Length: 151
Image 1 (cartoon, rainbow, N blue to C red):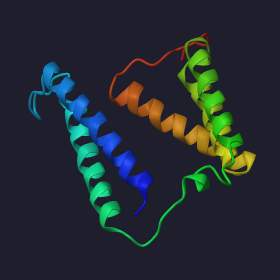
Image 2: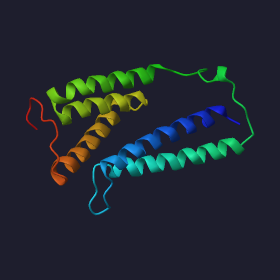
Image 3: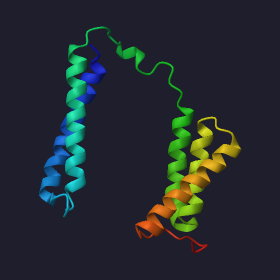
C-alpha cells in the first residue's frame, strides 16, 4: 500500500469538497445558462471522483510499500525552479510586452527545458501563440493584453 496516494487522495478529496460547497453558493445554473459556480462545481466533482478512485485502488493495492525517505531521492529541482521563475517573469512581463511577445518568450523557455532544439522551440512557440491568440482574440472576442506594441 502506497501511503502517499492514500494521503494525497484524502487531501484532494477534502479540498474538492470545500470548493464544491463554495461553488454551490455562487450558483450553478444549467448547461445552457451557466452561472459563476458552474465550472468550479463540475471540476470539483471530477477531482472528487478521481481522488476516490486513487484512494480505493491504492488501498487495495498491496504490491509495494514506499518509504518516506525515498520520496525526495533523485529529484532534479533545476527545471522546476526555472519554470517557476519563467512564470513569475511572465506575470510581470505580460502587461508591459503584451500577450504574443510574453507568451512566446515563456513558451520558448518551457520548450527548451524539455531539451527541444531552439529551432523547434521557436516554431512551437510561434504556433502555440498564433493558435491561442487567434482563438481568444478573433474567434472568442476576448481581449488580451496588448502591451507597448499595440497588438
